[in-house]
Image (cartoon, rainbow, N blue to C red; front, side, top):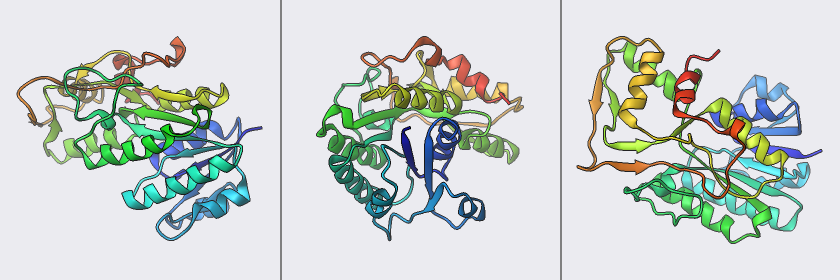
Amino acid sequence: MKRILIIGASGFIGNALYKELNSYFDTYGTYHTDNTFFEKNQKFFQYDMELEDISILLDNLKPTIIITALRGNFNSQLDAHQRIIQWIQKHKCRLVFISSANVFDSFSNYPSYEYDKTLSDSVFGRFKIKIENTLLRLPAHKYVIARVPMIFGSTTPRVQELKTLHDLRAPIEVFPNVIINATSISKLTLQIHYIINRNKKGIFHLGSTDLIYHLDLVKEICDALQLDDPVFKQVYDSNNDRYLAVLPKDNKLPKNLQITTQQVINSVIAK
């Protein structure tokens, strides 16, 4: 049985992955902040990447798959990933790295595919690229790079933020000329499950198969949530349309694991 360690399992994505995978695999997770629920759960380990060496936990647990869904200080994350990568090189183990569409945020004229060159203007995007580039130097069977666009769903931080801003009558920032794709947290966890179960390798783009303007997507989500008369602050970061979308070309998942923009919108009201 595969033994999975999710580093960052108390965060939003990590915890959703833990809930999806725990029934099928020998699954463990790390959490950062003191939490009695996680302390009581024998499958969770407290880990502070700024103070501790992750190699100690890896030596004790001996996972066959590590998923990193960390948040926090970028330098500490880079150091943790370096140690994880050194560990997987010496052990029968591979890394599933949750990356981001932001590794392409410098490109604006077209959507990005799996093996396109990465280039980013943002600190976040450049940080993700650094980890990706280290992984790309490994044998392909040692890693999965899962590039993820904006994530929606009824319990997601983005949807909670929309509701909060609406309740406060505060403006919701939208980008009218940015063309994106998106996904739902429920579909993302199923996709990662499939990738692990089928021993897939390489780079995956886990966004919707179709594209939409950011403004239109947020408007439709507000409609689905029945948020009356939301206030939008339209932000134009260029005069022309620009893309921030990750589409699959080489590593396509089966039809039932693909998602459309309409399904992403529907996911915000799903129970």
